[in-house]
Image (tube, rainbow, N blue to C red; front, side, top):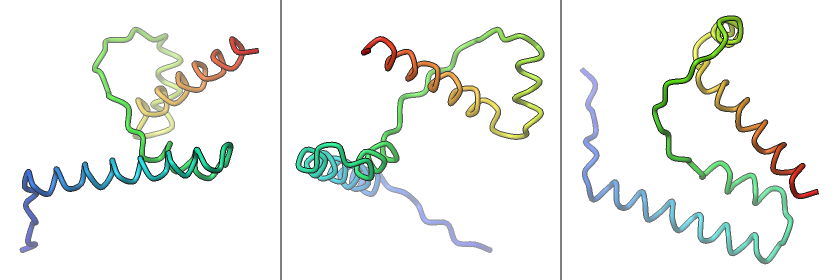
Length: 94
């Protein structure tokens, strides 16, 4: 029988503090380096946006295409939408 480690509120808070500290250090280092792609990538890895449940109506063929690729189709749809969103932001800046 495997032994499971219980996560207590104290440990959860400690994890949050650690993550917050890492983000603060990475932001400070990014300010010093200005434009370092490695630091930006590290910050992006730590960033976890809030997820919201929605009902979305998609064309059947679009949904079938994403589902055909296997598990995680919702994540792939989210990434595709994020890519379109980011491209729109870049175009609006120019």
